[in-house]
Image (cartoon, rainbow, N blue to C red; front, side):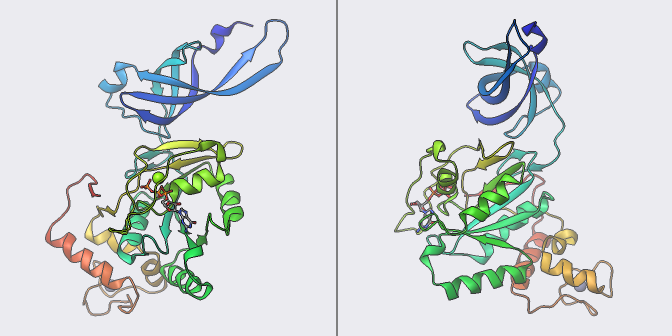
Length: 315
Ligand SMILES: Nc1nc2c(ncn2[C@@H]2O[C@H](COP(=O)(O)OP(=O)(O)OP(=O)(O)O)[C@@H](O)[C@H]2O)c(=O)[nH]1
Ligand SMILES: [Mg+2]
Ligand SMILES: [Zn+2]
């Protein structure tokens, strides 16, 4: 069988390294004498055709691409096409995401309502359903864990509590990730995203480091987004932690990013259609909800200083 038939292949961008893209493809070898098919995943160091730059097509981790001019010996190729994306998470930048797992530790670094909410809002802004992974639960008592789970339920989120120290919740997490095509682990630095990947995929062997005792924060160990295979056809992205994702949103759409507000607005309507749920008469939003003061503070900031259209972040 003619190998030229397989000259152009589809693959997925699993990492960006300097000016190169690492693309994983299924290398299919057809022997001359039989049609037995042997397939293995290989990673190619790729550049991209200049026409993609002219077309303004950016390529990120998670993009499905077509590669040509493949040099199997030196594991090199050139990206000639990019498939349209089904979704895009802006920060961390990953294409075709199907689940965002927001990792938040209960301690070291301490759970912080504002920080956790900012991460959840970035997923909500991208229209990707978030799952909260509550990490390092070996550091708190069972009673305190129940309080955290109840708190997140009141915010409208399910969570999977885990610990890599005693393997609690790990089986449930693996099951969930194996059912999902591309899961991104996002969250503040030091919450244990990379440790989780090392625990779930022992061959990954990625560097981790302890949380700074002085600042009680992570030390920004992971520097790049990278995809790892978990089970058949599922991928898990490790991402660099950052501390304060910026919220980029129009004030009128802000409330709809909070599931607990959405529930109230689905049951009954505010008197005014353009209600911003401040002190308007006939507003149905319960001002005693735990995250209302966070909503209100950020809404006022948005109104007084509208953000730039691109999503920035202060680490
Ligand atoms: N007690 C406890 N410590 C954990 C657990 N998971 C991770 N750690 C510790 O948390 C520290 C930070 O872990 P990392 O995996 O580097 O954290 P990260 O989220 O990847 O951090 P960045 O790469 O900086 O974003 C390490 O010292 C880990 O040993 C856990 O379940 N329990
Ligand atoms: Mg890391
Ligand atoms: Zn209202």
